[in-house]
Length: 169
Image 1 (tube, one colour):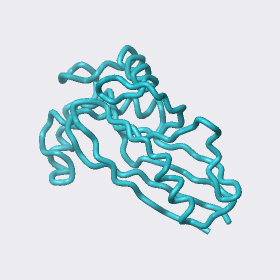
Image 2 (image 1 turned 135 degrees about the vertical axis):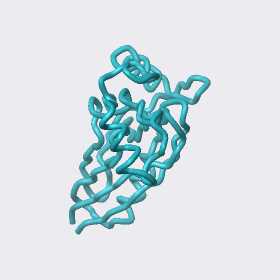
Image 3 (image 1 turned 45 degrees about the vertical axis):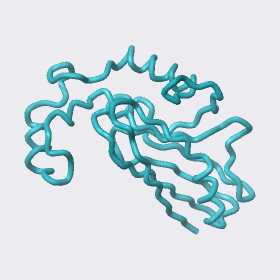
């Protein structure tokens, strides 16, 4: 059997957005009626990641869990936020031209929205999906494991899609 589901998640804009989606994924596993198999949680967006991490009960004033603060700080040192053209090779003039002309009406019509190289690199580094085992109808996440969808693109608020594919019997 195969079960497909989607989540629509709203990003803040202006800062990295984390969505803790563990219960929504568990609910879909329950709806699927699959007892043994796998569950893939994936982003179709090139600036988003799906990660598996411990829930950190402490939070800062923005609502980031402390592990998220630590991850943001580490990645900011490694891959600083893209704030101006020429900071990274990407986006180059051809990429901007394609974005403004070929994708007109499908993405933002403003060139500045392509200044998200850091988000692409962070997504590449952390990955866009996670796969989980299902046994006896339950996700095998251990005692402290949680699933997070992250939008690294800080350019603007928008809705993002998270795909859940459950395969098994």
